[in-house]
Length: 99
Image 1 (cartoon, helix red, strand yellow):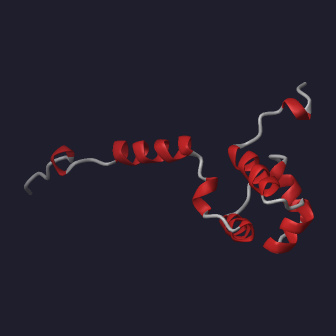
Image 2: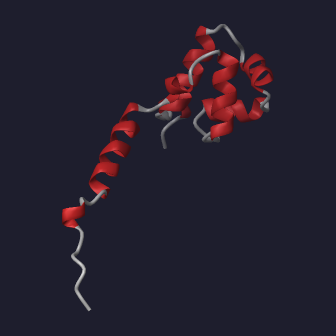
């Protein structure tokens, strides 16, 4: 069983902790600025919890950064690709049969 230190953290957790530390804030200070519970912030940084969109916005505002800094480039590319693959061109749609 891997130890917690060997666990791969989600990209959001890694970015959040790096930005918080670069800002010189403790978890307590960030939680207070963002208006969230300290325990919730701890769980997010440990990769034990995924934040809601509201929480992401609160954290970004408290850290004075754009929401986009938390975006995972891998997911952004996948969702663009999936959207393109999922679309059918009009010429590819089944033709209507006359009644």
